[in-house]
Length: 335
Image (cartoon, rainbow, N blue to C red; front, side):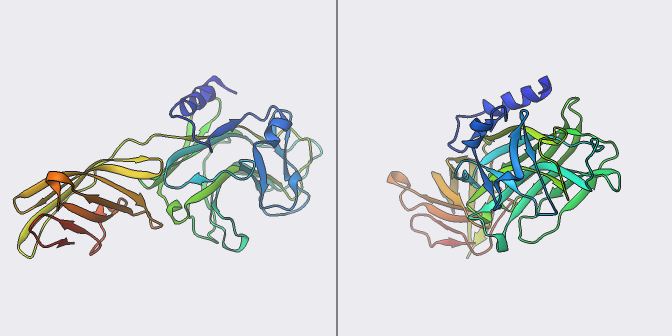
């Protein structure tokens, strides 16, 4: 591995205390790797295997792509968290002697759990090399809905050795796709997409590698290396304030320092109704639409203050008619 890639991996690994689903694999030992992975979406375990220090593949026809899912029983990576999956891909720009195939590809995959072949939700980021047409491209699949086609984004130069990462940020509700040249560090792709992962509480993640229609076993020109899945600690955010009047009464709701800890939202809310005001702790979760469902309830001297909120971070606004704020001796504010 290049020193540049090592520095990236070290930065990710030591960014937070390890979650149960975090980990890495350098594929130096087939027996060690066997304890870390589960062949997924395949009746054959031989599509992918460890050989010569990398993850390899063998194909005998045009079967669908398959990948190893991280975790011996498939690690449940939460969608209500921030994390990065990353790996190196090595895809030959020309075929080795004696090999006759049409195409090869390698990269990262995310699937919704529990997995259903007929209703599969998938995200992909792969490098794709066509040998019949002589071109290379990045294959970006950013739509998590079932049955959507890949979007191909071409780049003019061939980069057979790439570092891939997908970073999911539940607090900002964004997925970031990045690809670099493994040895020079040149950025080949950096794109942000609104995330759709909240629709499933957990996902499976893993590397994808394929050579079709046939790819020989024990070939060292197509492979993947240096896999890692790492939890990241998001920076707290402030939500946009709500300031208006309700039945002639001025009010405001302001959420600040909203953080995501152990898949739960926590922060502070300032509620003002007329001349009365209170600062309260607020907590919540992320629902299947990616909305922040937040609640606060005053106690002691702040008794009577409270709120229930539904916030869409993608639009920076509260969902219409889904929010309530209360204050002592006041009718509940609806907005």
